[in-house]
Length: 175
Image 1: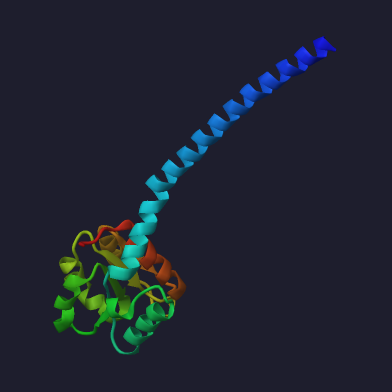
Image 2 (image 1 turned 90 degrees about the vertical axis):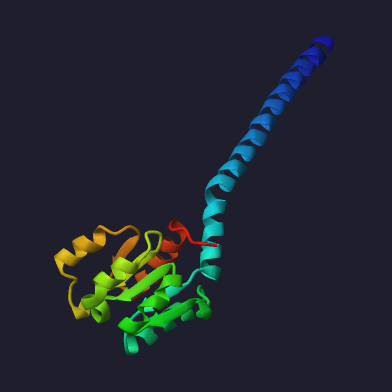
C-alpha cells in the first residue's frame, strides 16, 4: 500500500508540473493573441471607424446619377449624410479639396477626368463607377487610372460600398 501511495504521489506531482506548463503556455498564447489583435485588427477597426465618421466623400456626378449615388451611400447607414457632398459641374471642382474619397461617375465626367486626376491629392482615394450598360472605359484611360495611387474602377453598385470602405481603411486622412 505504501508503494501505491508513493506511486500515486509521483503521478500527482508529474500532473501538477504538466498542469503548470500548460497554464504557462495558455497564458503566453492568450497574451500573444492579444498582442496580434492590438497590433493588427484594432488599428484597422479604428481607421474604419474614424473614416466612417470623419472622412468626406465627394461625388462627381450629374443629374439623376448624383442623387442615386448619394442615396446609395446614405441608405447604407455607413456614412453620415453631412460627410457626402456632390460636385455637379466644373466650377465646383474646388469643393473637392476637403474630400478624402472621390467617387466619380465615369460617363458624366469622362471628358474632365484629367482635371480631377490633377487636383486629386496622393493620399486621396479615387473610385470610378462605370456601369456596364453605358459602355467601357477606353484602354488608354484605364492605363492612366491604373497609374494613379489609391484608384479603383467598379462596374457594380453593390461593389461601390465595398470599395469605399476599403479605401477608407487603406488610405490616411488629415485629422
